[in-house]
Length: 124
Image 1 (cartoon, one colour):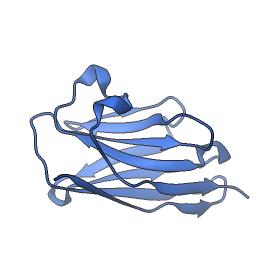
Image 2 (cartoon, helix red, strand yellow; image 1 turned 180 degrees about the horizontal axis):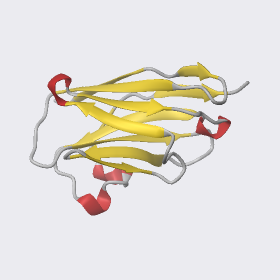
Image 3 (cartoon, helix red, strand yellow; image 1 turned 30 degrees about the vertical axis):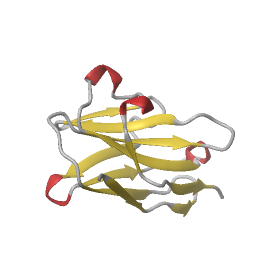
């Protein structure tokens, strides 16, 4: 059984930084990918970033500010979040799949395994 454990987040001031972690246990596949999504109150869940075979993908709203990376030996994916803005406030979810198709990498439906979510609040 695949389990994802997230950590990090909390309250930050605008312009601040934080790093989220997602550690996976169980599961394997030939085309693994891990992504971060976020959901703000009253809004739909949206794609933030993904990493697959060493390649990274970002939404337009976080490009240049967020960086996704992976330490394979620890089965851990990180999301470094810099220059945070109030609109980054959301619950952030880690998700993974072992059979991703590149064309769907930004779609929540492509990921069968999800973490519990961690709150990120950006305000002054």
